[in-house]
View 1 (tube, rainbow, N blue to C red):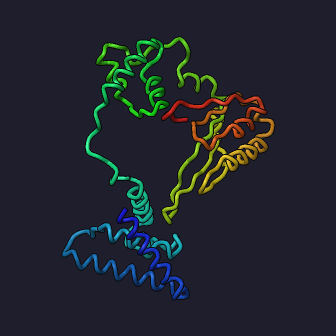
View 2: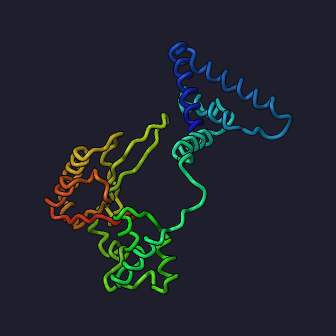
View 3: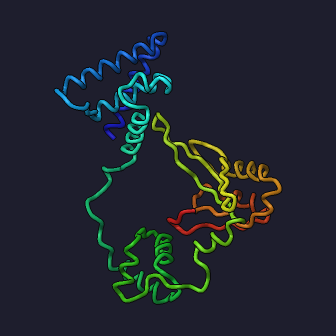
Length: 272
């Protein structure tokens, strides 16, 4: 978080510089880059230059002031390196290291008893189904379910008569369309949400829209736009798959149900 705040401060100062001397912007940026590079070289007697976190932050902030086509001749590193530094800044912003605690807490005895009870009262449930049911109850645990069942002598992964999720997707791929939200970080470290639809059979991706604050009404409008775009092809589809995001409201599902599609909600923590 401290690095992100420092990056924002440097960016604001450079923005002020843009407002003051906009006409000589490229020349001033080049002087700033060369001056900083000279300071880095003075810190080292010999060998390849080693860029610290402050150096990377400075160059990443300066890169906003000039077009990307000038980066190769202006900065002492290739443009791909500058982009990687920016991705590292974004990754540092969302690590939430201040909320982490060392080690993984031990699963309570009450949860272990509940897992074994679910397994005994529902013989056809495997460890993934039990994990999903626990998530619905507010308990988010993963591989621990498998370990608890295995230690108790219960088969964690039963072979069911009905097809698995993977087999269902493979058999019905031509009739499936799925939707999901992707997250994109801008150069200003602002989070944007991208709604995409994927036709499993044709492997065609439809970009529905981009917004900083997705709402149920916005998602319904994007669904209507997609239905109009698909036209006759939507009649060949049978299933719409999406997760349990509250943005996918009942009105969103009705847009596709009106065309004969069946809405399938994925289990918690399952990829589309």
